[in-house]
Image 1 (tube, one colour):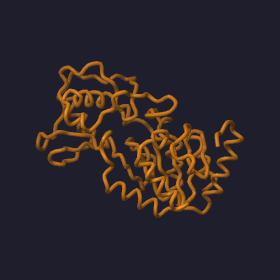
Image 2: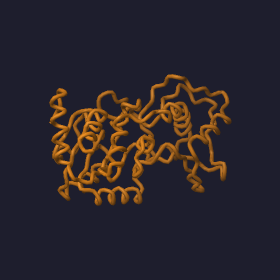
Image 3: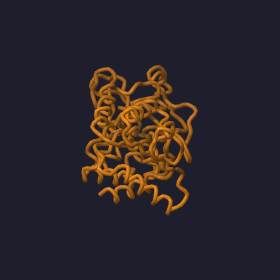
Image 4: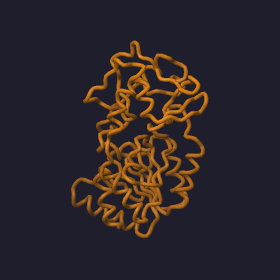
Length: 279
């Protein structure tokens, strides 16, 4: 169902609330829920398409590409980290507090669900808040790595206004002279704790997501086009159990034909309205 006006949206959300009445709801969220917080999506209207997304193979094997990644990541980090939760995030936290939502499975790495107050959040693609050493396994706070970068590269300046990519990265004009941070324990290679293109979602995270879904009796997909296979696999599990499936996304998704209801509207509009009806 494509929503074209306010009256139609209200009626559609009311129908969604009927489908969800008395259900224990799991959420699967994607980049579309964070666009109203200033973080662009990978796909759909307004997305900043990239021809060369960073793959794990390139990151590990290409020193120049790894340097470019860290320069761009540092330039975008402050803006990315200062993004605030929007009404969609807040609505889900309130639904959880009211006992309506069992938890959130998110494909996002921005941490905005946690900042909004959701407590049961499974970040299947990891988080930009942490950095890992690939040699010794030491875990670092991203803020500490930012300090190390600025100490190693005192000439670097972060512009006040910057065009973020979906993962908080930007395209730097130059990487000349940039010193890449290393592990302060063993001098090993560092990597943000996120799943790069070409990597698999860690099995423990995916099992946790499956467990959350099994404990739920309905699923809402919010702000995801379901292009990534991990998301489709979770939706397929919900379909096999024949539990209500509602998709809220401005653009068509790979699972629209499976859904009991699709709402082609923004999550910041739909989720707060749904929260009011369910609580």
